Image (cartoon, rainbow, N blue to C red):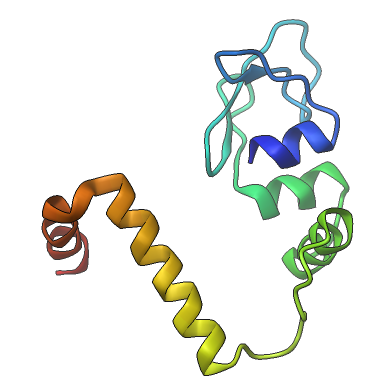
Amino acid sequence: MRTVAEGYGLHIDRGGMTLCPFHDERTPSAKIYPDNLHCFGCGAHVDVIGFTQKMFGLVGAIDAVKKLNDDYGLHIDIGKAPTAEEVSEYQKRVQEKMSMKYGRSRLGEHLTITCG
């Protein structure tokens, strides 16, 4: 989220605060989190796709994904279903990320709590 927000012109301080791009203000009221932006002034709460969509007045999420794909060279084949290999690789990366975040011992505990 931070990379995209900065790439589209927001100046973010060390605490993650920035001027909200969705309303006029003089002091920062928007907080950049790893996965989203939340504005305590206007109440906007958007992820990277919603942020891009709202920043550029794009009609649909797919237009925002296309813009991000073009602007950041993501090499996503939009409109093409992923292969079984790509899905497997993605699941492996998610599992590794969660393992790093929660540790091996707490990973099973977290998955049990969130998945049932």
